[in-house]
Image (cartoon, rainbow, N blue to C red; front, side, top):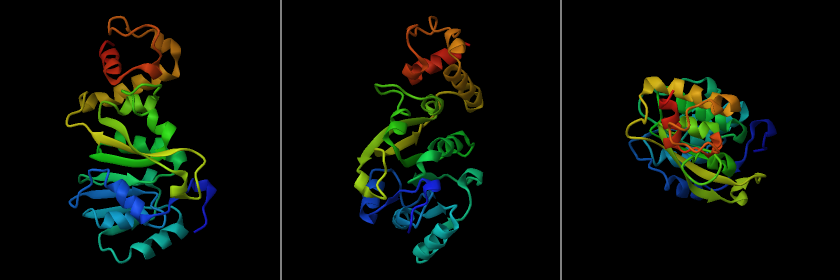
Length: 240
């Protein structure tokens, strides 16, 4: 099916590859799994045989129709033809495995991680640069969103993908990103909104970050927000 540029659609070519990628996840036969931006159903179809139920979200009407046709033989796939960013999340425990539109990576991840119904695990095919900025306890510069989700989730890149794995070929490098819910949040849940707001202000305004008590938190004064680890952000937040 023809790609829509406005939907950032790059489709995985091979169900065999999808099966290999799901093999890098902790998805089990007892899991409810969300497929966001499900397209024509390559991922949903493989997930149908690896999980209890698949909730496949696809906003594009023409693609949603194809998705329904391709998954009609599976009684555990539910196609939801709506905007995922406006949809309610499941009340029961769930996981996510999806090849999401690249331009919506941040809002999709914010919705999942900031909802009271946190997914137990999130597996997303995203741009490599975006994934690297979420892995804040690895060497390199990281992003605001990586710092914001760190108290709840650990992040790591599970597998790089090739441009030829997609149709059409993406212009950027892509990876399979894994976010796993920590057994226990590093902060009380009621403090997480305040913590996320603190992170956002520090990244947005150098003057606000400069006024934080980095010396008391034993953080070198020459470090920028993009250079701090999870432990350092928590120490800085708790010194307020």
